[in-house]
Image (cartoon, rainbow, N blue to C red; front, side, top):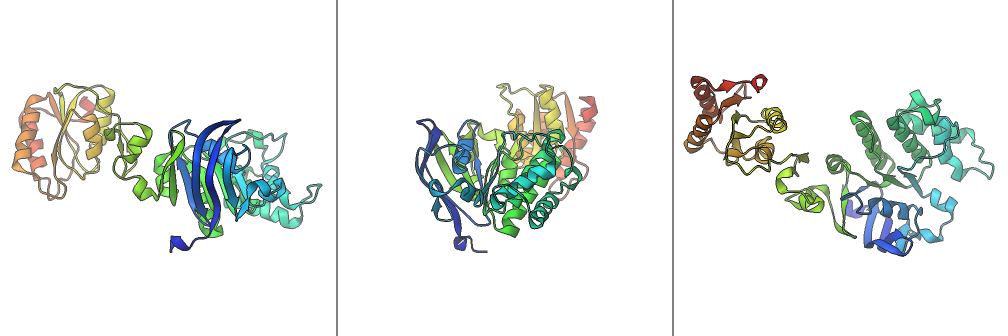
Length: 375
């Protein structure tokens, strides 16, 4: 699929947003195409919600242009805008004893007459939207009494049956558990692909933003700092600089966060022989207990290398895709000699793991080989 041929349906040009006359973010220029998921990320308070509220006309723009389907939104009536843009915002709505199905049905109001009477066709669209987000079991429940996750699905169904070309969501996964986060974002991705909706949203969860987005806009210190595909946003140390954290605290390829060992000491009590992610639970436990440790021998492309590098006092490392060296074996033996205990988390050592197997045997010979239960 050639992304260059996608029709742009939402455009901002030299847009400034804020409150009253105070500009929060200036010079906002971007476009979102039909079928694209465009995600805003950035530190708390950077202005992501302010941008979204301005696009949906909940806030008045300070200057610049916002066009939906080549029409400036200031020229659209409320009803006209409602047929082009739907929204799922974090603010609560007044349900007044309405059922979930009644809430979803309000998404059809832009298409009804002045009395808001829904036709049979409208109710079919309501039920189709409820089914699409798998919320049939709460359809007849009081909206104010369902869980946060169910409420978010109902609000998404409301936006779906509104049948707009653009969907705006402000932190749609906030307060949701893992199941509902995955369910909601799967539905969002499906809307983009199957209905060609342009979706613009803000997210705090960087791992989800990486997986679901076609483009990411990074909001920082009063401006849009960068707009690009996720693979280029999550490269090098850009994300660390965006959020103001040390490089060792975040691994951009896997979007993992790590607690960093700030200790200046060279002393360690435990040496961990790990690899392929098996050592991470031990690293986490040792870190929580404030027990300094070293780790090795780890290849620099190993799944757990970044976690070890962040939390360990010392890491004996090997270049990626190269056999472990005798030099690193000797360095690791010295670590075992210097520590109180050694924990090996590996069951099968593989082609490159012979030296790690020997290190385990060396630790056993010196009565230092223990398990995590001994910590």
